[in-house]
Length: 437
Image (cartoon, rainbow, N blue to C red; front, side):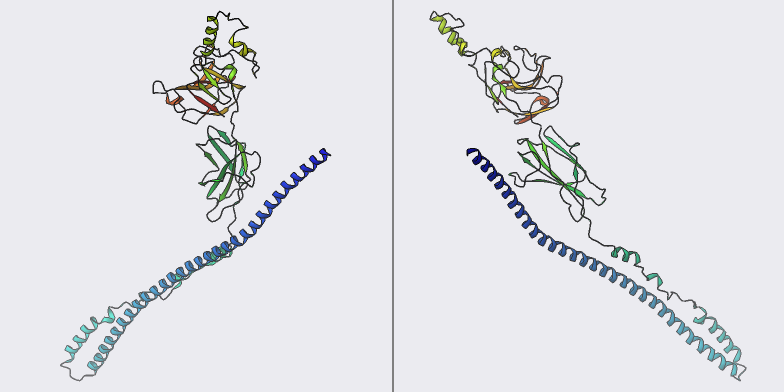
């Protein structure tokens, strides 16, 4: 009976989840119907505005070309009218001279004839008719103002809706997550010379796989990308996964988003192994701090027992209640604690090779600390980074100065990729440091 109840509960849970998905899908469909109405009204308004702009441009061109015709006609008319007036005056003067000449020939007074003939000759020589050009100054041909809109007409007839850019395809093989940066690479499925720019959106998430409809984190937008790749810098991987999508835009319209992808931030997960730590370090799973009395408490208790006549035998030793670090089970089979001035604690996870990323948060009043990697052979007296068996980033505030190349900022991120040293993850600490992924 109880098994049947449990099976029924699972069915009910599955059905409830499915119902929630259907309700979410119904909501998205209704929202799409509303969007269709709003978007169609908008594109219709935009289309009418574009045609009105085209009409206005054609009207302006028409007015300009008509004005050119009117100006040319007025200029030609003025020239021809002036030439016509000059010819008319010359003709009138010539007709007067001709009438005077006929009258002189018919005169009977022979004494006045030579004088009259000389005057007529001089008048003809100076007559305007002989100084006129009988060629029109301008042509009556207006063919230079003819137009041929055949090409433009074909272009107008070929007008159609601007093609929407295709959705880009994100190339996961070429994309990279490293060093607080994400480089996303994509391509267009078909060559499109009208692409003007791309828009990238990303958000943090705690879920792998395809992005979900409901997410706590909003999409962050990066606009105006001209290339088919983009690098996000200055990130803090406080979540393991990140969603990405990208869309292409031409001068007028944006295409659909690409299929969203989820990239995993390669955070190296480990805890601190207290069984390896120096006695002056107080170690938790993810944090370590300086404990000045850590190595003295047992010595004081042992001296007190010796003063009372007890023998510091293994039976009476205060360390009897705590097994030797060598005997504490661990992923590496155990080892001695670090001692002397090697204030070190190891991580609990072996590193065989490759690149690994983790973050270190340290207290502002920390005086000195380091973080790095080491061979398994690192001795319990050796300080991290001081021998060939280890390598680390180290900061020392005792001298109020540090090396810029090896000083991480608060909440800093360290990417270590020295495969020859990647055998143990080690953490060196003095006066307070906390480690996280």
